[in-house]
Amino acid sequence: MALTRPIGQRIVIGLFGALLFGLAGVLPLRAAERLEVQLEGMVIPVWIRELVDLGRPGGSSSSELITWLNLLDADSRFDLFELLQASLLTDQSMARQMLRSWAGRQLLDAVSDLVRVDADSSGIVLFNTLELLLNSQSEVTALDLLEELPAENVRLDLDALLQVASRWRRQLQQQQQLVLALGSFPATQVPVLQELSGQEVFAAGPEFKPLPVAHRTKPLQLEVWRPPDGTPLRSSWVVLMPGLGGSQDHFRWLALSLQRKGWPVVVLEHPGSDARAVHALLKGQRLAPGAEVLPDRLADLQAVLQAREQGTLVLPGQKLVLMGHSLGALTALLAAGITPEPGLYTRCRKALDDLPLTNLSRLLQCQLVDVQMPKLQSIPQLEAIVALNSFGSLLWPRHGAVPLSVPVLLTGGTLDLITPPLSEQLDLLLAISPHPASRVVLVEGASHFSPVRVEGQMGEDRGDDLFQLGEELVGRQPLAVQRLLAVEIQIFLQQVEAGEALEGSTHQQVGDLRLHRLDRNAAERLRESQ
Picture (cartoon, helix red, strand yellow):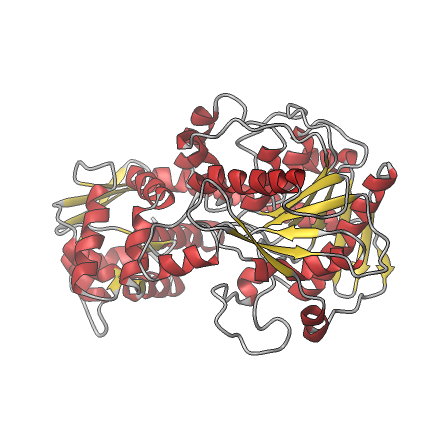
């Protein structure tokens, strides 16, 4: 039975290949004898030995496998064999740590519901086979796994996979509808902002301050950005927290832009979930960090606040602004005293069954089920929260249910599939108690990593930055996106300081980029239109 190419065959072959032969680079499968494909009540047998022979360069087969494969068009057959021959794992140490991480185990478990290796539904056989292969070779392909999985049968439930694919397709269609809806708004032409040079960034560099803390063996290393002499000081100071695997280097552009406008800024580095932790992961020296680092991140923040209260950290400003990217944004929200709504375990069971590849933040949200969160002290001086590429759709699923009294700026990009704006930033704004100054800022063409400034974006060599991000990850014009975000953050903080409400939504065309500043009413209309 041949499926139509546009929505059937390509999706089935693409997802079949991704799940069987390399989901996220670490999720293959297969058996020693036979693969059974279950589709619309039929069970189609495929002998693995023949598939391996056919998949090797120059291979051939004379069996009925050719008949089944001929039901696919030429492009789909090419895709399938390309996936079979592709490298799944190319770094032994990092691959092991990824497989052993909480997120890796959840994905393996979800794949095992769709692909059954004999009677095993836990993913243990897949995991153990990968480990054995990595003991003897530095690179693992799908065909290697086909030959090595110790089983008689592998059953692929393509019916269930198609249901998952249908849900993915609906989610992607909603993302596309959001882009179309945003594109329909008339936009005001705004002059393009100029970028700061690398020399200016260096000349106005920060003060580096060690801060001993009780919960860590070494002092925290703070970057303190003090406004230049003669700059009118603001009434608030800022704590800026990078995301998972992020570093202080990645957000100096933002600290500098705020410093120049009179805001003192402290940029945190969170040991165990910073760039050094990612480097250790790449070397196979530690597991991939996840939501289990949140208690330490919150303790880092509390230590900074306590140091300022006790006079160890001297900075001007009466009020506090918490600012963070991705996991740093979630840290800020949790530090404000809001806790996940009851029922997270039940919500996560359904979310993980769907293999959340169009919203990877759900893996981190669901890990909170197993994380013992500390009881946090209130922050009476908290004035506002700025959350870049934030998330929380599973933590706070109901509109208006989050009792947060301070205004929030949420930012996102239409190319973000880690924290997609429709289900994360827009829904999070609607979940938080209404505030007249709260808003969402969306940039068309921006991604999850657009706020992360890495080596090479200023025109110099790529250097040694671990975030070697290509255009497919960082999105369009990251420096221009960062300029827009810097201005939007300054506008938000100025209005909060002045006690001003956001008066309606704004849509801007800045060069080739379109920016949308949305109030709660506009966010609700957009959400309801999807």
